[in-house]
Length: 179
Image 1: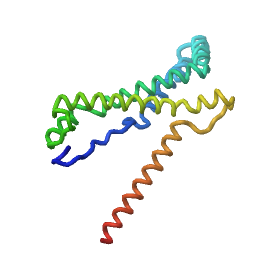
Image 2 (image 1 turned 45 degrees about the horizontal axis):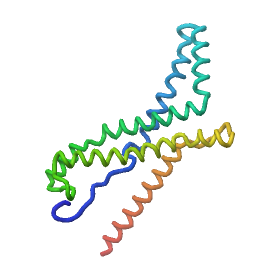
Image 3 (image 1 turned 180 degrees about the vertical axis):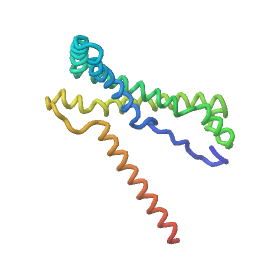
Image 4 (image 1 turned 60 degrees about the horizontal axis):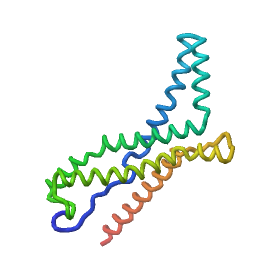
């Protein structure tokens, strides 16, 4: 409630966007990067380290599982960094708003924390599945080279939704100008 009228607090299912996928792929590429750089240290060590990294990361099941877990972890991490329930509750209280049936302040922060935790779980699992979707497709179809990735798919959908929002806002604005 805000000012005696019902309102809503927009909470996204996926607060983090594509950032967790970028973090996860960076972590997954780091051992391969180290394996390539290790040739500066020692040629024998580099060959052994490169073989180990290649053997580990060529296992698509292992790679996909690690990728999925990293995306879920980074989704929670990024959401925890960017969404502060205590600050939101404090701002709601200052503005005179409250959640119906919940006391303003600390109780609101606890409820918001629980809600965002549940939303983040579903968003993180969905984001993880989108990230490993090309790997799953490769495993089941046997196609070695798949040119579209989960991240690209997510970005295309995000851009399409953003364009739709902007077109709708322009149409709404033009309707108000005519009145």
